[in-house]
Length: 130
Image (cartoon, rainbow, N blue to C red; front, side, top):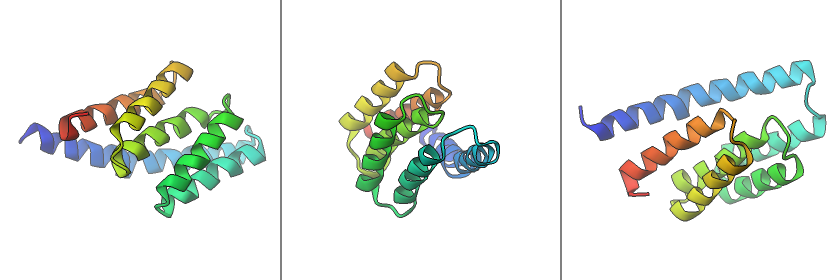
């Protein structure tokens, strides 16, 4: 099995199966426990809706606004990571993807989202020479 096939497989498993399940569980957890501000959760869900509708520019705007307004939110690192993911995966803008990930590493150095961002960076490097 070629290295590219392994990357495609794990990218599929992580991005298409595990992340949506984890995101749903996190949103449910915070909805139930009410640990987050209601307006904050609505703002994050708004960005998620743009992504679901495949309005990638709108999603980037919404995630950027979310991270700027709620930098200490539990969801802020995920929003910053998704900005990089959208630029790299959907819009094919490697420079902006790299900048978004660099901002994630700088602002949230201890976040679990860094693992996913590094994984995506490796995938972009293998597939596109990022």
